[in-house]
Length: 225
Image 1 (cartoon, one colour):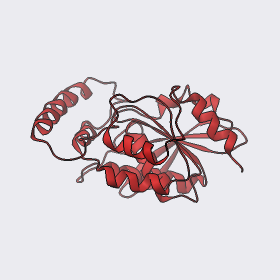
Image 2: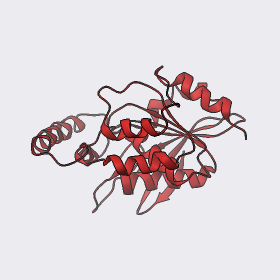
Image 3: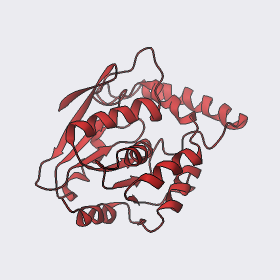
Image 4: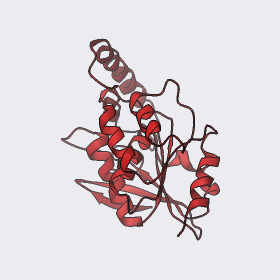
C-alpha cells in the first residue's frame, strides 16, 4: 500500500496485481473500498491499482470540510493517476461518476474508462426536490446507524453517505463525456440516473451489458501502448 497526499489528507493506493501491460486504476463505490475489485483484478492484463477514497478503507477521514465527488474524491483519483501515470480507469457507483470526470479532464492520461453501476451512482438527481430531500435525510440517518455496526477496519466515515443527496446535473456530466477519449458502460443500471443516460448518448457505441468483464477486455485489447 502506498499513501499519497491529497489536499489535507492521506489516501491509500493499493496494488492488486502486477503484470506487464497497460495500468488500470480502480475506483470503488460509495461506502466500499479497494477490496471490491479483488475478483476483477486477475482479468486485467497489466498492473491494477485500487484507491480508497478519503473517508473510506485505509484512507484518512476528512475533518472540517464536507465530502464531495466533484472536489474531494476527484482530487483523490487525480492524485493517484499522477502517481501511476497513464492508466485506464474502472469505476463502480460513486467511482464511475468520478471516473467520468477524470476521463473528461485528463484525456492524455486516460485512454479509456469503464463505468459500472453501484452505490453512489445516482446522487440526488438532476435538481432539488422536496420529497427527495426528506427521503435522503431519512436514509442518511439509517446509514449513520448502519455504519456504526460495521467492522472497524472497513467502516467508512458515516458522513460520506451525505453525498447521496448531492445533485448531478446532466449538462455537467455530458461535458465530460464529450471530452473523454472512450467510455464503456459495463452493466445495466435500472433505472439509469439522468447523468448516466446523457453520457451514454454521447458515446452510445461503447456499451456492453455483460457485467463489465468483456468491456474491460475490450479496453485492454484496444490499447496501443
